[in-house]
Amino acid sequence: MAPGGRGAGGRTARANRYRSSFAGCDSAVQLSLTYTDAAVIDVGRRHATQLPEAIAKELAGLNVGGITKPRVVDTGVSMLAVCQKTRAEDLTFIKGNLEAEAGTSALQQQTTNYTADLRSRAKIIYN
Image (cartoon, rainbow, N blue to C red):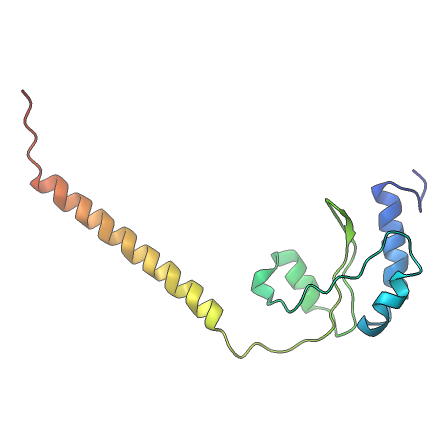
């Protein structure tokens, strides 16, 4: 289809036009009203560890008011804007994940040891 058409290429072209006109989060909704089938959705605050690595890297390279390149997704074309950045001081969720991984590893080791002990003490009698 021609650029601006209904196919993924046309949607990506329109998304790139939106991106080039994007002047920050405060005007995002107003800008979206000039486009057909465009929506601005507040996805809330996210930590880089909650995003796919490629998107997290792209967002890390953007300043506040920046917007990512368009990505074709199941529902159309998606872009993420950086409305605010703060350095995460509370890393509890990372600590919790690390503790869970360590606990799982320790539990697996205990299970292996317990199973080995049971096998060494087992008496199997065939009739």
